[in-house]
Image (tube, rainbow, N blue to C red; front, side):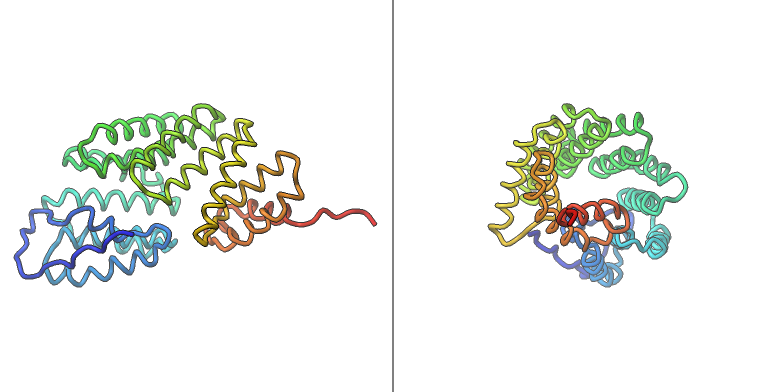
Length: 313
């Protein structure tokens, strides 16, 4: 659990031409599993930012509120929040400007507008590189790796990874695991499973170095999922069962782990054993509004596989 940042101090004057907020302070407020809670945290800081006359903090908080609104599907609200952020920009606030560009691009991508944010991400990349904001530059390149066509996307992912591993900024270096994961899925989707496995294993190593237990679990899941694609289904099942046992030991569960256990058992010719896992996976994953909207056929399949096979009387 991250420690909440100190409240802004209003006892000292702030130089409006200088950025005064530490990026780690904003990072500490994020819970990407609950963007509504994150939004509330950012909003709780707005009063202090306005009282302290801190334009950099104000703009950066607004960009993160816009991002949280976008993650909740409130794209109109997000656009208006980003309009306010951009109107509050001043000369010299390069990092705040980069954040405006990044979040504008993310909203355009998520809401499927126009160029899906490509121009905003390109501008964010250029400004972040010029300003020496390596972590934000990696973020911009990683987004270009998502929105650009496959050949260009691969080049942007390579560019992002090169900067992440060579940057002196620890926030940039922490991107290595996410980038390896994204690159792994790109290769997996292209059917290059051996390449994908190497990238997923690299992502797992990075997650372990970072010491992020939840992300280690996700990285292990990705390795096992790729092993199934490579035909190593017994090994994949063993790892997914191990993950489920570890989660149960701390009173938790994960629908995606349950789903994969079911898929492995099904491939191994054990549909009766798979059925309760598919049922549990459906129960958990059907509560995810984004999954219901984006992949209804996946949920329909889980439900169908969870039902007993009907036999003729």
